[in-house]
Image (cartoon, rainbow, N blue to C red):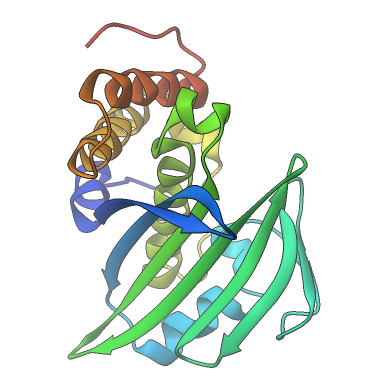
Length: 212
């Protein structure tokens, strides 16, 4: 399957905001993207346990308010809120850390928009990888979601299938740089933001960092 990496890159709106969560300094990373689907179809794709593995990861658990979920080989957490066809929120528990994910779906004329905010406490991990730590991963997820909505019966492309290609590596580098720019707009020191972006690129591609 040919992937329009530049098209997926351009489809995402990105923002970073420094906030407070549970009385501690935190950063909120927000992605917003429109899809050629109804709000009902988009909601089903992101909330139906049978469909989530087709574009993201296998998931188990009780996907309702108060229930817990577990993504295979990744994060788990508690569903904090669920308003069908509109919004859900959950904790994101991984590696001993807890962060928070809030997803909303908005119906537009002829399409639907998904907005995802991932809020994490500031930490050495944030210092090293910055906004791209979550931003790049979620962008690849939304790319998978777009492919699924356009080709619902197509198998999920393996991450290595594009991260090992020149086009995939370029996408990740450009995505990391875009998140660095969003972070600078939020007030992050430019040198620190782009250094974190290079660290994110190196993490996803397995290649050593290169100076900007």
